Amino acid sequence: MSLLKPIDEDHGGKGPKKRAPRNRTLEVRGTEAKAFREGLLSVEGLKSESIVGRTILGDCFQAFDVLPRAIVDLLVLDPPYNLNKKFGGSTFSRVPVAEYTKWLKQLFVNVKPLLKPTATVYICGDWFTSASIFEAASEHFTVRNRITWEREKGRGALTNWKNSSEDIWFCTVSDRFAFNVDAVKMRRRVIAPYRDADGQPKDWNETGNGNFRDTHPSNLWTDITIPFWSMPENTDHPTQKSEKLIAKLVLASSNPGELVFDPFLGSGTTSVVAKKLGRQYCGIELEEAYALLAEKRLILAEGDRQIQGYSERVFWERNTLNVINSRAKCEGDLLPFDKLR
Image (cartoon, rainbow, N blue to C red; front, side):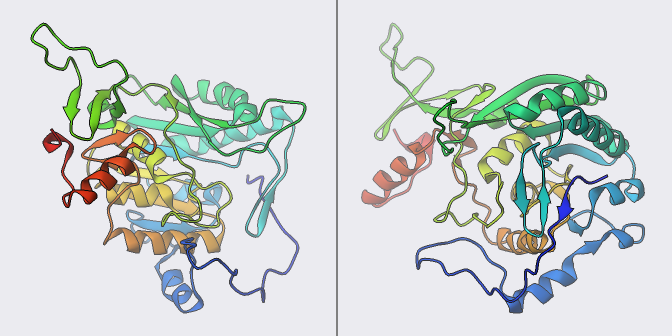
């Protein structure tokens, strides 16, 4: 029941994009594509092979019926939003709200049997699709919160407010679910450094590189950077989520060794983050070009477990960690937070 339609045009013969020398956008070269393609799992092979650690190429609605039941601990859903968007060789056209809501309800019906009773579900959307998400999700899950995150880029408008935010709906299958609050704390600069009667910092740390406090996470995120040309995680996927954003979901709502599943995988961010953080993973992607990018990123993750903006087991305010690292490098040493005193 896919609302994505193939684009009736020839995509061959265009060759690789010309990029500036410092552009770090990931590409799959011709010599790599064959090897990565062999690593993909087809929908037809789901009954005979394990899905753990694999990228499945095909329509997720065709895969749901043959995937194992009750195996998923964390489901990350980033389906096409209800707006006009091109995804490689496919396109999504905005449909009436009722039709999109009906499509979401069918998606939840099909994917729910794959979830454990203790599973958590995160559903991505924008302001326009959020009404549909809430209505559809409420019929199948317990809706616990809505995260709103700031997308610092956005197209300006002359007769409306600039659209620069997106939503993530936090849902669970039951009242038994994981939420590791200490794993997703935010390290912020201290603006008002209060001290106790003895003159010691109160709930904050004083370092040679500034004053910081680890704060509990809220449902308003202003520290997310959308992948762009100079970031090594960047690809040509038009709606790629950042590794930092997905890492918050994975750390909060799964434990090491548990299975994270993303049936709209895109260029692989959810699987890559799960791998970097010691979780099992599986993803489904309709477009081969994006599935191949996911395979390349998973291989690169074997030698690089870093996540931009996440260090010392905390998430840092946007641009803060870069300042700390720059100062430490100037002094000839890159020290962990608990030693920067």
